[in-house]
Image 1 (cartoon, protein in one colour):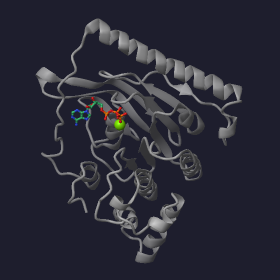
Image 2 (image 1 turned 60 degrees about the vertical axis):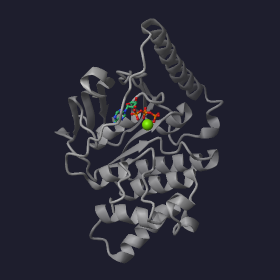
Image 3 (image 1 turned 180 degrees about the vertical axis):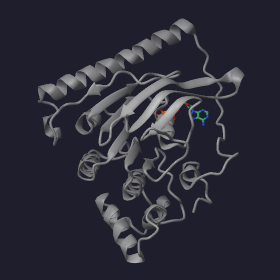
Image 4 (image 1 turned 60 degrees about the horizontal axis):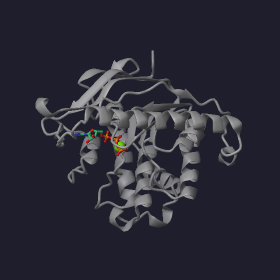
Length: 298
Ligand SMILES: Nc1ncnc2c1ncn2[C@@H]1O[C@H](COP(=O)(O)OP(=O)(O)OP(=O)(O)O)[C@@H](O)[C@H]1O
Ligand SMILES: [Mg+2]
């Protein structure tokens, strides 16, 4: 039994006469303590896939399971880092992380909570900015707050949606190492979305391409059996690293060309997709409200 799985999952958006089938028949089995990277093109459905794993969206067909049980709502065992960071604008760096920590560790004393929050702020090198509000931070700093918040919840499964895309190369490299360290030492399971092949090769056990949408699906995985710890300075000289990078890049280029050919053949019109508020009709959780930038989330 897989630890976390997508079993023949499909999901589309829009009314029946104007639908986009975003994901079609997606299958993924993640083992406990595995590090899986999902790589794909913009707009193909990567964030949708992560939302399904988090339980923030439900599939129209198929099932998402954790420990064999259907995932029907978000839970603290699956921590998600959103692509748009979703920080609460009126709380400081410390306050944003503390709020999440309170949700997951309600029994912490004030001092324990403070120490815990400070540890994760330090981890992402934001100690000097701990009292700043999101509007006073750069994009990369906000991304680091969001990462620290997810890691501070110490979830069993860490779901990261392009967690490092806004960072400079040095900060990015440091945080790649930090995420791999937490994954290894704390024996977590990670599903990470990235658009960077080298990042996936440095971090993951498996790299799974998502094909171009609409009707995107996960392709066969590339197993990354490079020994750990992985040395990024070898990425330009190590033949195994280079071979894997070539295979994955060629595969992605092939997907792009296939999609282009299809667009010419079918002369498809772009769908007029409008956002649907899936949360209006049911009770929303803290994480759902954060994702929607609901200003009452706190
Ligand atoms: N709630 C929604 N309502 C309508 N369409 C949606 C909704 N959420 C996503 N979509 C559509 O689904 C498709 C996939 O979106 P998604 O955000 O999952 O892509 P992505 O691969 O994460 O893109 P990016 O790389 O730009 O982050 C897009 O065409 C998007 O417009
Ligand atoms: Mg996305």
